[in-house]
Image (cartoon, rainbow, N blue to C red; front, side, top):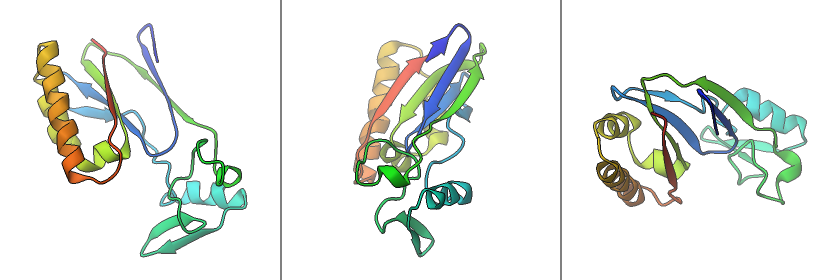
Length: 154
């Protein structure tokens, strides 16, 4: 959500947001991953009574769920954290886009390449084509769902 010159991102789960700058650099809008590989997240889930196990350093809740925060899976709800993290970012003239994507999108591309390419696009059509290119690339590289949303900041 954008309020005046502030971008407010509340998130949970395995989707990520990035703020793309005019020069191609980027900032994470979702700095804390909500998965069980993060010790503080794992501890909170165990405090809720979740059974967290590890196989080859991949942590899972009840043997199948890697996320620590969610409100979409009724069978796991009582063991998951349902409070989102919130980040407030002061939008500057250097901020060009905010991009929200599922883990399937970000796992299938390199953010460094994406942010550089996207920042160089000038027309709406070029931006759309760039986004479609990376969307298709992610779909080829990943067997997960792929979702991406882009919004202009300046």
